[in-house]
Length: 35
Image (cartoon, rainbow, N blue to C red; front, side):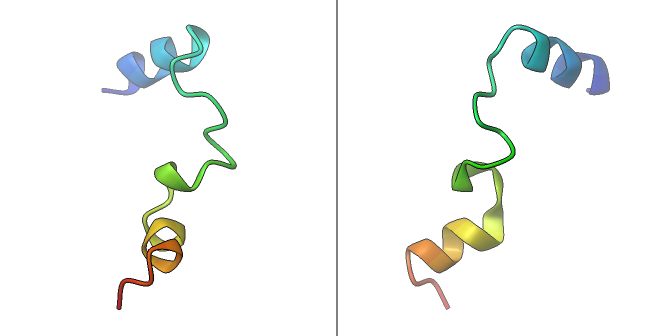
């Protein structure tokens, strides 16, 4: 799994992975007001 993630990052398949809320469950839940 780690090698697949590395390849995905290298190929640019995870754009904005450190800022996009889709990659952070808590931020996503807060943005849709899930409680």
